[in-house]
Length: 79
Image (tube, rainbow, N blue to C red):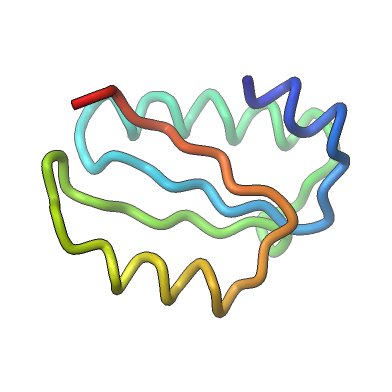
């Protein structure tokens, strides 16, 4: 999915919305490698963590809005 999003949408800025556990962090490591291969520098993406089963995501939504990314990539498991 990360490859598809980066190759097809060609974003200038990416937000990674990451589940704060081993799954999300592992997925982010893979996503970061894909981004590096496509010359997306660390300053061109942000990472935003959330806790699994968290209900109030206002803080994270505000951070995403402030960053104004072209693409948001979710790295999470369904709940």
